[in-house]
Length: 463
Image (cartoon, rainbow, N blue to C red; front, side, top):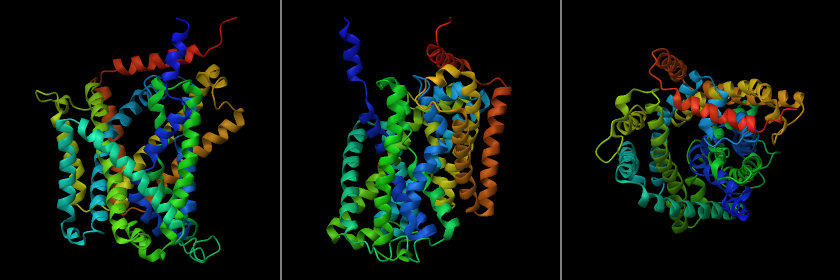
């Protein structure tokens, strides 16, 4: 029997497996969707912007990584929120999941945009094809996702191969005479352009902290998860840097800025390989993210409804248990931006700014958490002198501000008002649900008690 714990421990995920999980969730559609916008801001220095974006995003989510090194929280992100946030912020975080639907529109439009580089005739029907793609993927959630899950694995494998070919072939065709830090076109937009590119590319650099969701399956999670996050961030930074060098170095910057990577791929590959890359690389990458986003949002939203943060009627299900009302609302949220011509920059900002505002607040709350659980902090993976901790959290807060402000300033005035109203409504509606006593706080309290118990387990024995 003594060997049983060891056998169970061997079945759990180590640093390597957790690192792969973080890398897989980070490298994907984001790089295909936002790369050309970043090139438009900063030109050849997009590779530098991508490395900086990985560092900035790592700091922007500092609270997550630090908490992962302090506590073993079975509930992952939800347990972290329960331990760190007051109920109002838990509600804001939960309700904001609804706006995931905005990403669906961006993904669908990007698939059509890339496909149009192979079949230009479809560009005239871009909106309707994008709506058709969203409709198709929503239908797969109704019939169940077993087939799509298997197909998803195939698409991911093809995506990885496509990116490797893109980098290795592309590096041989880069014009290094212009794609270097000493060329006049390296910092196309100056310091402000570089900052804007970092903010825009932060969308593509999220995902490295996702191993936190694997806490129950991790071996020695207080050490393995923080290590995995750091290694995944470093690997993604290197891969993105190479992709950035190729993307901005093969053809003149003006020809790819604010377009898509299909322009570069056409220059790099023979036409048959170019077609395979566009379909197997770009379209599959975005399609996997679209399907993953639609499939993964269902359960968190149902939990949000069941806890009372959203009206109960949204949770109505059919005889097979499918939450059709909630998914219909998400579907409407997804297609509205397509009809009103919300630009890519606006869509990224609408999704990223509320997240960064919440991250900023969470990073501020870390000061209180460390004081409340000094034993857990002292034994934590990232334990450091008080001065260095304060400096780290100040940098984290500034990174959240940088992304939020930079993205906000790129928006039109109407979109800026929309962001401000959206954030205000999130807080106001969360406050209303609490005050009206429509929220079932039992699950939140249970998660908080579990988190506190985990913290107390790390406390030294009483003398």
